[in-house]
Length: 413
Image (cartoon, rainbow, N blue to C red; front, side):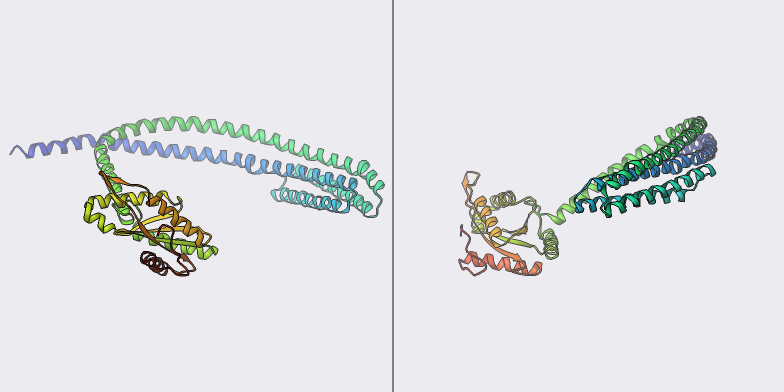
């Protein structure tokens, strides 16, 4: 009869604690709604002002700058055309002249699409008339150049084209300064709106944060233990997944890629070589007299030998190549981006040198020897199965001492 009493206490505490938390939560929601409404109102006003500053005035300022630069390049190209004697050099400057004229027209069209106030429209119309005058004078200079009247072209350039271009640049500078002043005024208004929004948001936010911290403090105490348990479970799950992935793709003894992973990488290498017209090579390595090592010294020594062979194979090839244990005492090496059979034989010779190094195990002198067969894509096969069969057959030919036209005897055999 004493057991039901403790069970009733948590329910009583829960009922006594719920109303303050519920009320605080409702107040928190109200504060957040007020904060959201105030922020939306203020941000809408601020957004309109920023739209004027950033997307309108600044865009116009950038376009005016583009027009100024292009107009300067156009005048400079015309000046260089007048000075150039080489017709090819003059043609190059003429191309720059035309491109700069295109940029001027493009910038003015973009300005027109953005729209103008009445005063702005008057200034733009005055610039349009100025541009027509400039074009007429510049075309006159080009006509004089084409007629071979270089001296007259220089005179028109210095007395008419350059002065009228300077007048046009001053008009553009005046327009840009006007937009910069308008930007400054809009920025001041935006700053005022920002300050009002900041203080109101700060007041509502502090109240909401204070209440939220009280609720969070109580809630965090409840969920901390569960969070730690979930975190531990997730960590164990990730470790298990990583171990399963490693076990599924790598040999547990040597740490090399297993047959499954080797097949995947071989398929990728074949697709890459087929797409780009390259070559790749397989070296099939079979240890000689490995059974004698197991029989004489035990399987623990054989495992150490396999591990050492894996290290020496890995150290004798490039980082981009792949070494895999295919099973038992058989290994396969995938060499990508080779030039031909000589590269494969060189790699096989490097493997021979690595395996022939002295090896001492538990005071025993163990001699490692291997037979290596090779197959090249696409010479010896067009898919992974055909290449592996070809490399395996070549390895047995080497092991038996028989040579063929495609697989010559390796030096260490």
